[in-house]
Amino acid sequence: MSAQALQVLVLEDEPADAELELAALAEGGFRCAPTFADSRAAFEAAFVPGRFDLVIADYRLPDYTGLEALEHVRRQDPLVPFVLVSGALGEERAVEALRSGATDYVLKHGLARLASAVRRALEERREHERHLATRKALELSQERLRALSRRLLEVQEQERGRLARDLHDDIGQALTALKIQLESLARCAGSSAARILECAETTRHALERVRQLSLSLRPSQLDDLGLVAALRSHLDRQASIGGLTPNFDAAEAPRGAAREIETACFRVAQEAITNVLRHAGARNLWVRLFSVGGRLALSVRDDGKGFDLDSARRRGAAGASLGLVGMEERVALAGGTLELRSVPGQGTVLLATFPVQPGEKEGFR
Ligand SMILES: Nc1ncnc2c1ncn2[C@@H]1O[C@H](COP(=O)(O)OP(=O)(O)O)[C@@H](O)[C@H]1O
Ligand SMILES: [Mg+2]
Figure 1 (cartoon, rainbow, N blue to C red):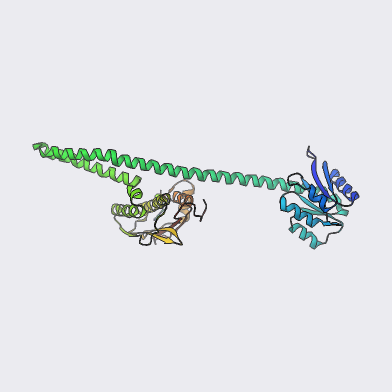
Figure 2 (cartoon, rainbow, N blue to C red):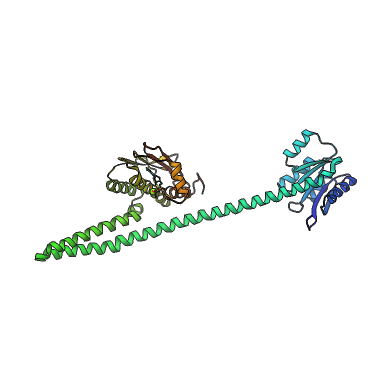
């Protein structure tokens, strides 16, 4: 069969029986390198995890039983194939043996079956090991993916913050200076004053756009004043753009959430609010920050037209729309939970919870 000899540990106090067992294996095509043990002490001294491909054990010995040997082996090695061989094994004992982790059992007067039992046991073990290896590789790649996503979000936040500051500080200040200069120029410009004031107005408009852009990239309030202030003013701004009534409640928001948690919560709220503006056709928008079991909770609710979650999820999975997927990803990476409820015609509610400090588990991390 295989080129390498099978390392077999044989627990048997009758040398003739041990010979018969090996002969049955040879008959079935196995080349074996046996180690013999005829007592508890010999068996337990010989067994070392990883050293044997197979254990064959007699059911009853003067100072030991096959089941005790099985227990000894399983404590150290859950996988090595273990075949019990017995003169007569009642059905109950056979079931007990299999339950205790024996791979198979063979009767001494039916040793012809030993080789096929061993072949099956070895194949099962290989299959099991392949399965374990695949699962390990999958876990590893999931872990890598999570690390990558986390890093990506961090870098994205940093980059947005830098852009927001540059827009606000450099371009914003240059435009402010330009506007002031134009206004002062207009005061002594005589007949051209009206046109210069128009330029000042255009500049004011550009300044406002830059301010908006800077805020939506990363509101400075998030860093300076925290989540509650940033979310309140984001909601007000967006509601006034979308022409709907904002309702904000943060009376019971927990204090002292970590900065990255506040960022995650803000980004989820931002996406949910954008969705309400873009899709819901709502009149009211409620945003609430509160505390649930020591965690930070966010709810965003609208009284708009609602939607079918399953079909939106399918589109999301196909890459057609990434807002919901992105929210789920961000919440999961922060160790949070996310629940969305929507009924066509009856509005939508999003509920997310986050640990106050990163790493306080619930969901995966
Ligand atoms: N508050 C909401 N009201 C109505 N429909 C919504 C709401 N939020 C999401 N949707 C629906 O779910 C879909 C998926 O949302 P999302 O993943 O954010 O993608 P996108 O906003 O880019 O279309 C939207 O296209 C929309 O049909
Ligand atoms: Mg969206």
